[in-house]
Amino acid sequence: NAGVTQTPKFQVLKTGQSMTLQCAQDMNHEYMSWYRQDPGMGLRLIHYSVGAGITDQGEVPNGYNVSRSTTEDFPLRLLSAAPSQTSVYFCASRQQGGTGNTIYFGEGSWLTVV
Amino acid sequence: GQQVMQIPQYQHVQEGEDFTTYCNSSTTLSNIQWYKQRPGGHPVFLIQLVKSGEVKKQKRLTFQFGEAKKNSSLHITATQTTDVGTYFCAVPTGGGNKLTFGTGTQLKVEL
Image 1 (cartoon, rainbow over the protein chains, first blue to last red):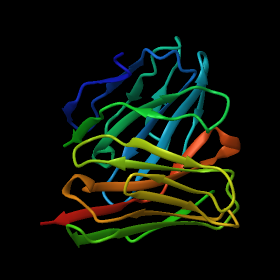
Image 2: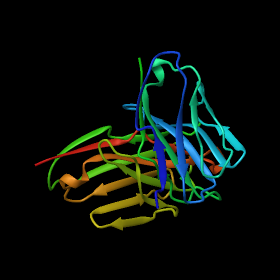
Image 3: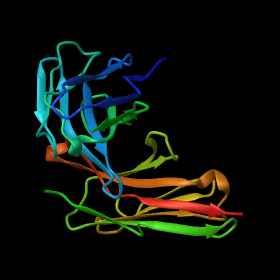
């Protein structure tokens, strides 16, 4: 099992550029989410989805878009990158139906905006 | 929104010493989860606590959930270099569809 796969692992962007972080899971999980991690601030939820066609905002959604056209994929789009979006991004998934289910994280995407 | 305070932010210990990190919430929690993140790695689920006063053990790790379900602790007995990393607590918010993480406790173990 691949689990949760994120690409790319590393990316450098110029301010104003756009890009998409890809996330795919092969565990048939309904719930998927994106977090960003900054030093001293833990993990903050950006967007999440409880199933195909359904997305919602997390704690820090500004500057990011998501879509969920399939159960497997949950891409995160930066429309116009800003230096404040320099961070480590983690995609995560779990079964829906309660937070009692283990969340599985991808290995992370290191993004630098210059 | 739901806030979870986690202390301490950093902890340096000598190998063999004990370590404890604490998580505190202003509201009663339905459950709390603990994660470990190795340097350069991703968070990995350790355990979930659900019941008031619950205590669970995993080898040298002891997890406790407070009687009022507002706080929790993770205690490591006789730390080893393999325990190095950041430990996070996480609690459900937003009707259970969100998981809010504490700020984490970074543990360094020196030989």
